[in-house]
Image 1 (cartoon, rainbow, N blue to C red):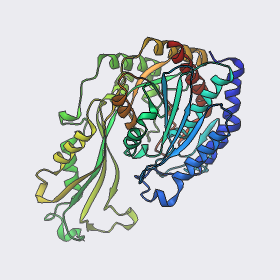
Image 2: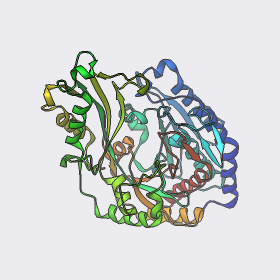
Image 3: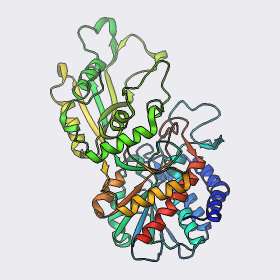
Image 4: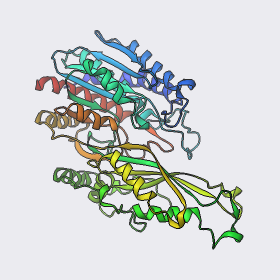
Length: 469
């Protein structure tokens, strides 16, 4: 158990050390390489790694070794290693790259302008998940301060996660001898259903993404002259999307994008739905009289974690309304993001999307689908008895409520990679992305108090992992 004195030290560490470091980190526009192809020249990712490295060096932790590892042409990783009292190995994971700015931040908030309001640290990347390296090392220092043993721990903090972690397999290969036989993975890049207890992620959806382009003319022409003879590129795009999605319900039509939901995950969804109640149906900032697609909390949990859904996340070829004349536009390009059930292979699904969208184009239009991401989701192995007990014990002691298990709708490609590389490992995947935290969108925030308590939970699970040996 974490003592009262250690719990107070963690609180002080967050307020006096971690929050100031995260404040500086938020100011760095270290966008993931997918969104900043000139990341190496711009230097923002290196600045974020340097900030985290400097903070780690300032911590008093005997035996801790730190290193920034660089492979040619790849984003760097921050590596730390701490010997333990057993031969078992824990891998602690996080990332420092960020999503792009996104519009819609309310004043005085802005993506690179850290602001603290009501115990929330606003700004891009603090919660997703720049805090991870600071919280992970703080949990280890807390155990050291009270003399609680732990296993050997290694930290791997990457800078390519928001781009699908395409650099990470190269580092896993290069670091394989140094990683050892990992039997517990701690990842702090996930979410929580509320800020009242520990939430453990048991599955993650995959992703198939790319750009659908439809070209009907070499140049734009007067819409009054051409409409009725030349089809709208947007209408053709709509017809192509109808091959994937039922526009009325949002259901994805091709069977290859679906999978059976395991019985255990259905049971967990039912329990999570009971805990969350209608709050899950109303957690998003819906406009005016909007209402959710789901009618029950359990249905909502499964829909956002085990079912595929399509989002159009960007567009080219559409002028701003103030600049839109009566022109039949030559082309439309839509950036598509298809979230996949955890058991559907991402690369195969991306190939299926390309085949479905490109075959037999209406009117012989020039149609192409250019994939840019294909990531397979993840489904956790059966939870070991020691881990289940540790999760409930830590959540009950820190929050006064037991832990809850639930899938998440996002994608962390690293989890599938590690699950394949270390098939006997247990996983504690959790995070601070709770109600209204809005990762990837405007007004992203880190709930400071929850992150502080989560750090205590991580420390207790690391101690339990050592006891289980």
